[in-house]
Image (tube, rainbow, N blue to C red; front, side, top):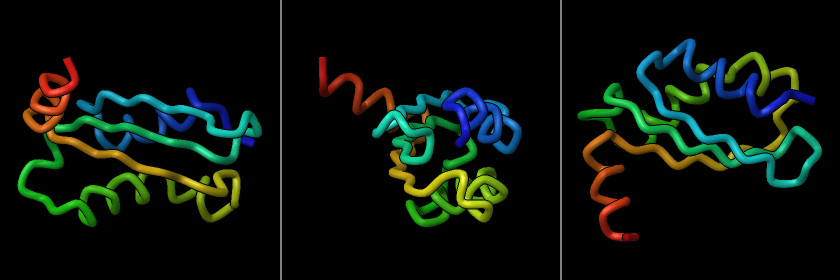
Length: 87
Protein backbone atom coordinates (compact mmCIF):
# COMPACT_ATOMS: atom_id res chain seq x y z
CA UNK A 1 0.00 0.00 0.00
CA UNK A 2 1.18 3.48 -0.86
CA UNK A 3 -0.34 6.73 0.40
CA UNK A 4 -1.75 9.44 -1.87
CA UNK A 5 0.84 11.82 -0.41
CA UNK A 6 3.66 9.47 -1.41
CA UNK A 7 2.27 9.24 -4.96
CA UNK A 8 2.22 13.04 -5.10
CA UNK A 9 5.81 13.31 -3.82
CA UNK A 10 7.05 10.77 -6.37
CA UNK A 11 5.45 12.72 -9.23
CA UNK A 12 6.78 16.05 -7.96
CA UNK A 13 10.29 14.58 -7.72
CA UNK A 14 10.14 13.96 -11.48
CA UNK A 15 8.07 17.05 -12.39
CA UNK A 16 8.92 19.74 -9.79
CA UNK A 17 6.48 22.32 -11.16
CA UNK A 18 3.55 19.88 -11.16
CA UNK A 19 0.23 20.52 -9.51
CA UNK A 20 -0.90 17.06 -8.44
CA UNK A 21 -4.22 15.78 -7.16
CA UNK A 22 -4.36 12.13 -6.09
CA UNK A 23 -7.60 10.31 -5.36
CA UNK A 24 -7.66 6.83 -3.81
CA UNK A 25 -10.51 5.19 -5.74
CA UNK A 26 -11.08 2.18 -3.48
CA UNK A 27 -9.64 3.15 -0.10
CA UNK A 28 -7.15 0.30 -0.38
CA UNK A 29 -4.14 2.39 -1.34
CA UNK A 30 -3.53 0.66 -4.66
CA UNK A 31 -6.09 2.11 -7.13
CA UNK A 32 -5.57 5.78 -7.89
CA UNK A 33 -6.84 8.53 -10.11
CA UNK A 34 -4.24 11.24 -10.59
CA UNK A 35 -4.56 14.69 -12.16
CA UNK A 36 -1.28 16.37 -13.05
CA UNK A 37 -0.81 19.87 -14.44
CA UNK A 38 2.73 20.60 -15.59
CA UNK A 39 4.47 22.89 -18.05
CA UNK A 40 6.73 19.93 -18.88
CA UNK A 41 3.82 18.44 -20.86
CA UNK A 42 3.99 21.28 -23.41
CA UNK A 43 4.61 19.97 -26.92
CA UNK A 44 4.12 16.36 -25.86
CA UNK A 45 1.32 14.04 -26.88
CA UNK A 46 -0.91 12.32 -24.35
CA UNK A 47 1.11 9.08 -24.45
CA UNK A 48 4.35 10.97 -23.80
CA UNK A 49 2.74 12.87 -20.92
CA UNK A 50 1.57 9.63 -19.34
CA UNK A 51 5.00 8.07 -19.84
CA UNK A 52 6.48 10.86 -17.71
CA UNK A 53 4.08 9.96 -14.90
CA UNK A 54 4.71 6.22 -15.24
CA UNK A 55 8.46 6.90 -15.07
CA UNK A 56 7.96 8.88 -11.85
CA UNK A 57 5.92 6.03 -10.36
CA UNK A 58 7.99 3.20 -11.83
CA UNK A 59 9.13 1.81 -8.46
CA UNK A 60 5.58 1.70 -7.06
CA UNK A 61 4.18 0.27 -10.29
CA UNK A 62 6.81 -2.49 -10.63
CA UNK A 63 6.44 -3.55 -6.99
CA UNK A 64 2.65 -3.61 -7.52
CA UNK A 65 2.13 -1.10 -4.69
CA UNK A 66 -0.02 0.64 -7.29
CA UNK A 67 -2.34 -1.82 -8.97
CA UNK A 68 -4.39 0.57 -11.14
CA UNK A 69 -3.77 4.13 -12.26
CA UNK A 70 -6.10 6.48 -14.10
CA UNK A 71 -4.31 9.56 -15.40
CA UNK A 72 -5.48 12.99 -16.45
CA UNK A 73 -2.65 15.23 -17.62
CA UNK A 74 -2.74 18.87 -18.66
CA UNK A 75 -0.46 21.71 -19.56
CA UNK A 76 -1.22 24.81 -17.47
CA UNK A 77 -2.95 26.38 -20.49
CA UNK A 78 -5.09 23.31 -21.15
CA UNK A 79 -6.01 23.13 -17.45
CA UNK A 80 -7.09 26.80 -17.45
CA UNK A 81 -9.25 26.17 -20.51
CA UNK A 82 -10.82 23.10 -18.86
CA UNK A 83 -11.44 24.98 -15.63
CA UNK A 84 -13.03 27.87 -17.53
CA UNK A 85 -15.42 25.49 -19.28
CA UNK A 86 -16.59 23.96 -16.02
CA UNK A 87 -17.30 27.29 -14.30
